[in-house]
Image: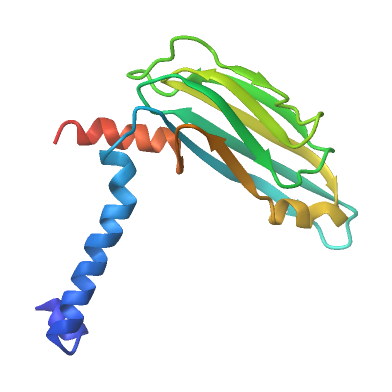
Length: 177
């Protein structure tokens, strides 16, 4: 009855219902269905502060990469379009969650981006989570580089742009349904 008040015709109700089912299917697909080889990544900006008339900006962001599949992924390349070299970079490797623990730590090369804009990862075991944190002061003239930052993840596995820990949490909860 509520839909009939919002929409004027039955066709609009049917289209709206189909659109809702489509959006639910697309958004929850990674929660209900996982691949044998699956990499889920997410980049978030925690702090990005540029004061008016200031020559520097404060920035903090992090990239999370998780192997949510069942098999080890041999080679992964994470390419950043253009990240300022003034940022300091730190690396943390841990378990995706307590229920999905890693067998071993993956090998991560060039995580500090000193030799180009690519991070190379090999032997990324299931249940591993890589967190790369970027922080520091950058010249205000370079703030556009971070606003337009592009990230491309290349792998022989299925690659999904979502929160790896949130997806794993959703999969655990849906297993109870």
